[in-house]
Length: 208
Image (cartoon, rainbow, N blue to C red; front, side, top):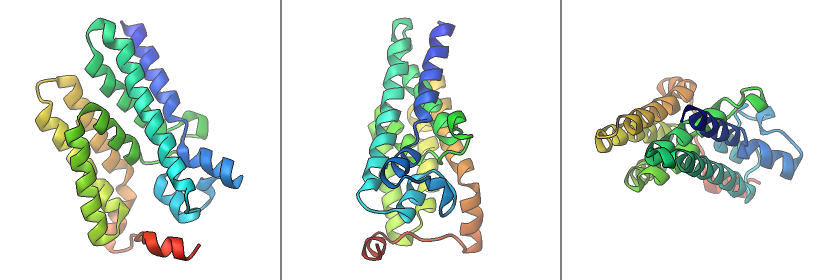
């Protein structure tokens, strides 16, 4: 079984290395999104740097790779009776691959879209709660980072409460939420100091 776990983790991690922002910026603009803005290979920096419909392609890549990683790892571990645990293992592996991609010099994104997709795959209730909190926080403040951090808190709390009967799933969920918060540590500092940049979707489109 340990060999199967290794295969599942490697599959998820390598899929995580397929960064939507980096791939689409290269294909559409012949550029590297990490050379612009915050230098982060995430969705927000891509939108600020390029905008337009290509942003949805970035989302599509990250959503598909996350779902594939979860399902692949689940299928690999299903014969041992750990299908649900496999879903979470795939989620953790793909998130680590996205945040710290070896094939991209360990310069990845912050994993929010990966985490949201994983939450939907594992427990749609938690996924919808994350989406609701993010949308409300962003609509009020226009801070993507604040919505992301609050969504990460909901992620950890949701799995801690709703999946306390499955230690591996619960710990994986708490870990992913804490990982997302850690990845936003610089944003949190800027939020506290009042220096975080806001995102205005309509203005971004009008100024293209």
